[in-house]
Length: 135
Length: 83
Image (cartoon, rainbow over all chains, first blue to last red; front, side):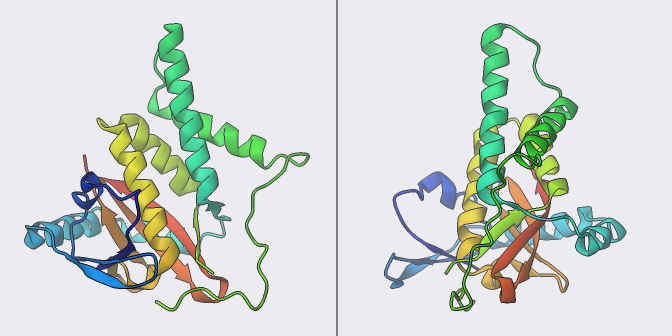
């Protein structure tokens, strides 16, 4: 089950991406209704396939990893810059980025972002009175 | 206060790889943004629970993530693409 707050950014094509029932709320928290994908069995199958793709040892390593998380705003910005680089190359008639070059590109952005003299975009400025929503 | 959604560097590399190789890059970008929007509000109630972590799919992406309620922090640890 998924729940979301509807606003102008949710489009029909977004609903097509759901593979399980979705509770839809308005901005005031009022329950508007339930969206149920036509083929729920397909959703179960997709999750089963995704679970089967996961190497348990590799996942365990990732769960134990001390890698510091990158705020999603930064992830989104890096994807935008990657997209801009792809477009720039296309416009300049240069060869396309290979997948390996794309990964190297986002790694270089990360290095620049977190260079000792650069600003970082960590989002840890919270007070003890701030609370996250109860699930 | 909403949860802060983060991705590990390894997961971000994975997303860049997926985006580059995807036949519909816009769909990958949209799905990753929507996953962020959903996980910000109530990450423990979404998708399926696999014990140590949870999994959420908005096609064409699936994410594996962990939640730290004390820090209001969601960490995406893996992206899986279904193209």
